[in-house]
Image 1 (spheres, rainbow, N blue to C red):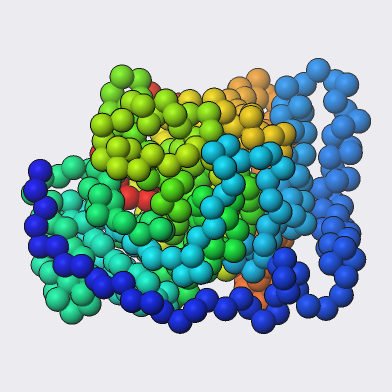
Image 2 (cartoon, rainbow, N blue to C red):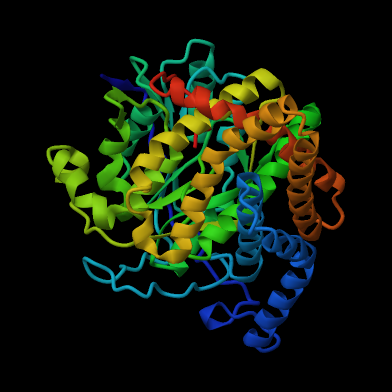
Length: 491
């Protein structure tokens, strides 16, 4: 394997990072007692959740009846309420706040602090993206972070992407690596990481456009909070103008980041640092890159560049790290510097904005969802093996989500196939009303966060679409899990 046409971007010190003037030491905003503010926030959240709590209480009174659908509805509703409560009462943006230190002592010593302005290598792998790659690369280069090196790996594109990258290399001074053979996304990125000697390694996807301050906010979140080994940015849909399907997905993305990731981040255990903007401390991830590139599942290479799996190496290295490093002891990623295994936290930076092209047609969307479910299945066997050790909160969120995903196709079959076949149309209607109620709760959260935005009305459609269509994809993903193709945007 050879790489050609490399051009390095010089790392120059940028302006010193200055905390927001509204932030006091320890991340406390000016104005008022923090305990009072937290209490008021919790009260407001409970008031907003009160209608759902009433429905939950009514369902609890009926739990004495032996009914699997009723128990399922109760658990889903209770989990939804818990996630909303955590996201809106416990989550703090780590760019703006210093987060509480982990209660457990770190193995391998304390969490070492980063420099005030660490150097960053920003990586992108691309294959056959001639139409969109320029906007992505320009947004990477337009970052307002000073000490930055941008590297793009062309995984043997055949559609003119290489020519675009050569032009951008000459104009912008980025590093471009043209691979002589197609390696797949993970191997392409790991090839580029061999030259990444910076304290921070960041990734994005080729269909994304980043806000100028997005990378800086993620990096400063890591600087402010040494226990964070990785953080995810906040992603929305870029192409909402293409139609209803894209707008529906946009509201779903908002909730998955603002609510689901925020709830996980409240425990420092975000289970997926998503590809649109994934920022890692070098010492938290570097030793595990060869394991990521060569990941195997059910006896076959798992080619999807799973963001979940890479995140799992950060979350679980206290229990999994030593064995993985011994397996790849001769790799330069391990032999060059063996970093101690530490119980890193993984966070989410809500203020770090990035936009991605979402599938505008049903076929590509279904294929994307099948890839994501395959990644979910594969990661379940890795992260699921240790997440219970990270504490009750992270475990409840992780395994609760797993149970919901696994039960979704079963419940869809029971309510949408078996119940109508047996004439129990009321049960089907109740199921659909429950799905719609959950979608309305997510829509309300969107409306609260974006009071002047009318797109909240699309969110219930995503819940209905998920129940009627997407839930059925998990069995197919499981049946075809060993099939793999080069794909971006996998989770």
